[in-house]
Length: 281
Length: 288
Image (cartoon, rainbow over all chains, first blue to last red; front, side):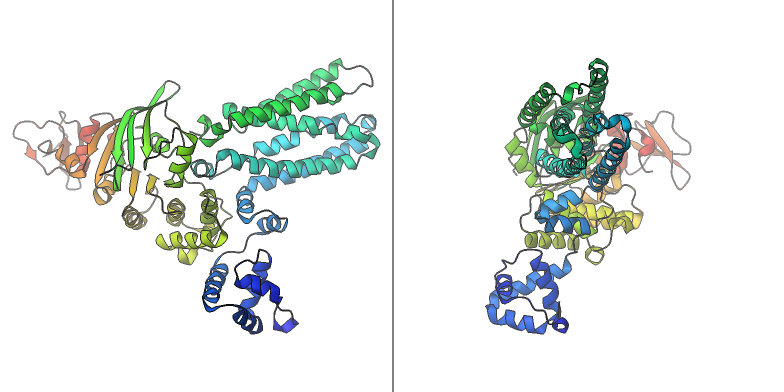
């Protein structure tokens, strides 16, 4: 990164830097390098007009003064997430815990399914548990119990619903991704192994839709309880060798319908996420 | 003078509990103190004015915007600084990172501009030297200053502070009062407090609440004047007094309707506050 190893910032990047147009993470590399490399500072001076150079030094001073993002936040930025959004996500440590929890739960479930003789033909356990993971993740990603700055966030100009959606999408990307990988690890089940997807989205949407009324934990817990009860009922009523009702074509259709209804409900009542829930008062 | 906040008939119930009862007030630039015992409705009023909780009835505007509409609420929030009663922190964040996080919530666009603003507010509360320190390693007073810095992001025109001096030692409290006084220059500050000292030292105006209603609205001098001729000293606690306590000198200070020939004493803001509450507050909460 310095004269010692012979590396220098490319002239094009220095030109962008001088214009204030160099994007992170290249901007951070350039900032760090320029402090220790007289050669690059000289090139930068030739490329810049004095006013722009002064602005650049001011920017450099500010960059040096600002803290480096943590590994998690830095990872999100490198994955293309905006630095503001990355900070909003990094500000929810419990989100990371929910992700790790989702990974662990899926691994355990996959292991049980893979090594359970009775489950070889019907991955019922995996299909029953997989939809609960995104629901649980969303439940712990937002709200007064899990977010210590919830009250400050509610009165901030950023819409509460937008904040909720940012965190929900982050949870869904990880939880659905992990579930998807687990499904790929069970190729013997074919497309049946993906039958958790629509119920998972339906449960998550229903949990969110109930949040203004039951709270960010109560809503998902209620939906999770209904899901378990439904599975118990379906299990008692199904015929020998038949799949559980939620994983049949009709069940998938009902799930898709629930997703649409829940999404519409969320859109119509999005302002309800913009004030403190009564449970937080 | 055009009021920053104009509220009329605000009422709010939690179940059968009446948290706010027909509250009307107008706030102008400077620091206004909000005094009252526990359960008086101070925090509820602050949350309503900060747009965190909608009132059941009544209306108010902040800097000309009506928070009853989604757009109006957004405009109010862009001009609002809020320090809640128990500000929460992400303990793994540094002071800089936390204030930066709040700046993102306040929609400050652009990393450079945002960081300039974060440095400005941290300088303003005297935390420049510890900006890189993790919040979990900061003292209670410093954490409270971090929360104040977060409230000051974006140079808000209306600053709502909910009991910011609670839990601070006397030196920290004095330092914090200086900061509040500075923040009150050129902007409207609503300061909820249990401490009549805070009001006496900081506020150009004081509002006293009890049981969800406004009991007094005026200057600290007017509140003190309420106790004129109604404070007296005696060797023992006067049973006819509305409140009485032993002073450091050993005699009793009584407030209420003095008996004939009583030795009248100079009234204080605290005496006026006790008389305005008139039995609605827990007098033990008031520092003697």
